[in-house]
Length: 106
Ligand SMILES: [Zn+2]
Image (cartoon, rainbow, N blue to C red; front, side, top):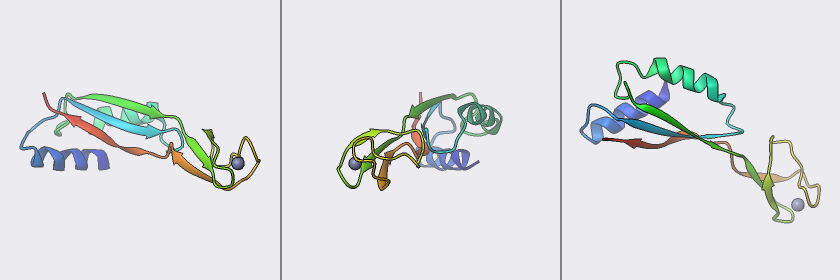
């Protein structure tokens, strides 16, 4: 799993063998199922720098900005239209994240 590889590299840079906590940013449009991710992390982290670490997930609700009128609003899919002008040309400004926000040493 990519997350484990990144954490391993970071541990090497920080000169530590272990992290006590990992915080992940997961957007509502990232395609990641939180339950599945938590489950996968539990087994993937064994015998790695994340062994025994708390996994904290920041769930980020997707938001879009209309390229026509500039309105910003929450969306539940990439196929939403602008609430104000019904334009389809939206820029997703958050909600596609799937990344490590921080790794914490204690
Ligand atoms: Zn609009």
